[in-house]
Amino acid sequence: MAATDKDAATAGAQSVRRALAVLRVLATGQERGVRLTDVAAHTGLNRPTVHRILRVLVEESAVEQDLATRRYLIGGEVSLLGLARSARFPIRAIAEPHLRHLSESLGDTTFLTIRNGVDSVCIDRRPGSFSVKVLSIEIGARRPLGVGVSGLVLLASLQPEEAAEVVRRNARRLQALHIDPAELLERALRTRAQGYAYAPVGVVPGSRAVAVPVRMADGRTVAGLASATITERLPAERVPVVVAQMKEQAEQIAVQVAELARRKNGHRGNGHGEP
Image (cartoon, rainbow, N blue to C red; front, top):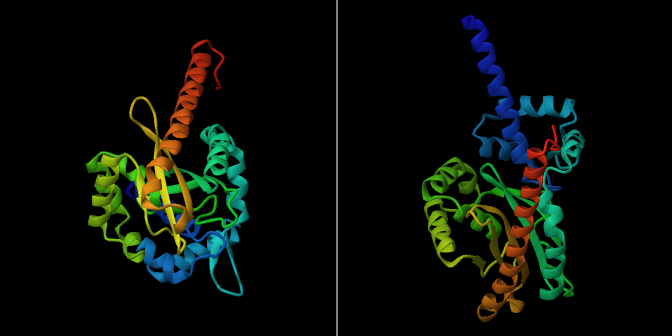
């Protein structure tokens, strides 16, 4: 390959990576949207570059701009592309009855969150039966790994070296959230030792949250299972009781995920697997 071809390929790859970085930041904004200045701050790109990328993404319907607020949001094209892999997360279907069971038995909102690179993404949520519902994050909410109780159990599941690398890569975003990277790593170590994460002050003012890992028999953590409620409903003495109930459901989810994997592998071994 000629030098000019290599340069063009490198530039093209860089453009794709930058566009994806911008989309990931926009995904954190949910329905509120994200300002151009915040996209620049979180990605480390200068404003003219971010503006140029956003303009192209808007033209391709991958991004929308709210004309009233001037904020940018994930566009319809991205959502439609995601429908092509609607079965990409079978754990969501497996976990759904367990989320529902917890939301009914505890009376509070439950969440299912997975890791995606250096982020955590909420893939399901079930409001509880209690009259005051803490809906701290939406389905699809994306945050730096370690932020929030679910993200913390996911970060805590990593080996210390990998956790440190994730936090290093998220340093700019954590700084914007006023989170100290070193303190976050210390919290991850404590979470790993106690087996669950507990936030006496939740995302929503006046709330508390707790999360447990969905851990496979081989030690892999495939998801975080969380519950959020108002402060009065989760005093410190009730936390062990709630954690025990959540761990029971998390274990059942892990067993079903393992069984699904075994069935899929068995079908492939018999020549009946998916191409």
